[in-house]
Length: 341
Image (cartoon, rainbow, N blue to C red):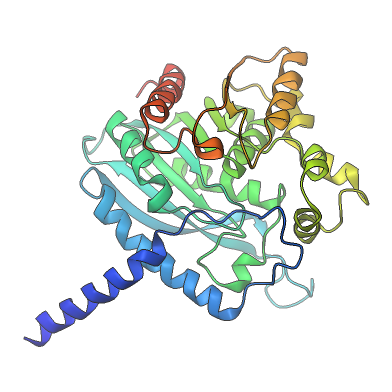
């Protein structure tokens, strides 16, 4: 009886908390200049949501995937206020999810996709990504999903490590390298990378910095030009980015340029697919058009599709509609040309 009671209590707690885990991906808000710094209580709530969502992954894709969550080290160090403090310079420890299709034979090699979450201060959640992970499992891909510095659900210190367009990009690549070295079924010669929004931003900068480490990439509604972005966003958004990068764009435009994929188009050599939507309320289609123009100017091999006023706006091909599912099939078809699952 005590054992059954314990199970009942745990189940009740899981059900009560599940609603919190279903919250949408957190996004940087455009018009909240006085948005307060998250409280310790909010960080505790996010950590609780993360623990619950970690269980929900097993419920949603555990029938098709072997799931694990690992702690790995980035190639970039932890950032401390005192650069000579004990531990300064140590690599930052990050988390990553791994999903391996259950249908793979024990010694069978398979291609891998690095799936990067969006939202900046957000995390990889089953609410927004389980259906995509399930689709990738059915196609035979191994998936690794990094929780790069600044992600929510890991406490204030990790949240404050955010380095927009800086060390967070190295964190994503570190997850790629860890998986190739440590997951025996991963074929290191067949690695792709996908992401939407800020995740698409990660895709573009990973391809620019390590073009030989990925065979293909997909960037959905990607943040592409921070200089342009600061121009069409509000004052609150600009102030929040100053907290990420160190200065306002008007005070250091070259730093924002350095962190913008559009100014690194020349370095991208990997086959790439880009999607955007003309009614995107977050990443203005102008940003993506600028990225497309830069790639064309450099004579790069890539494909793109700009959807016209499709319902769902920024989320248009991540939701559960016939058009979204068809769009994702196009994405998987493009990736499959190079990864051959």
